[in-house]
Length: 149
Image (cartoon, rainbow, N blue to C red; front, side, top):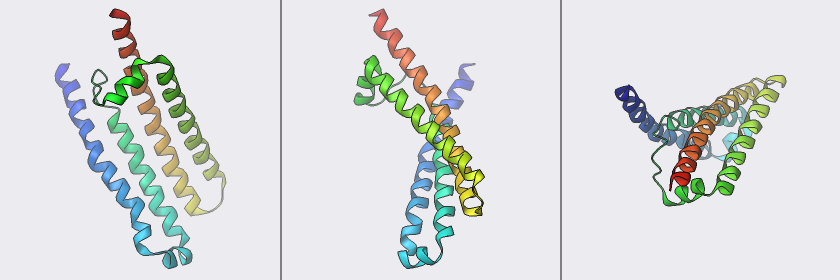
């Protein structure tokens, strides 16, 4: 069982190349130039849809990391303070809801580029949902550590 957990924790490192690809996809339309984008707006929707998909997959992979390890000092301060942690969890929940809602609204719209963007929004929302579960686990672990002190 520990080997499987280690495998998943190692798989979580795939988040770094994936987020790099997502950022490249965000910048790619800007490199084309605004003249090209104004005459081809569907290119912008397609590129940003792909970026949203990669960000969603990135968040899914980041949810595979070990919840007992907090790597950043400011992150530890957030999880050890219940008020800050609840605000952080609420922000993630609201963001997830916004992307789910925008994705579902995109399916109602008739344009194909909006539909592609809707796919990206839904994949990002699913990634955020997995990451929200990870955040809840981290919060519970820090709450247990604080109560055992």
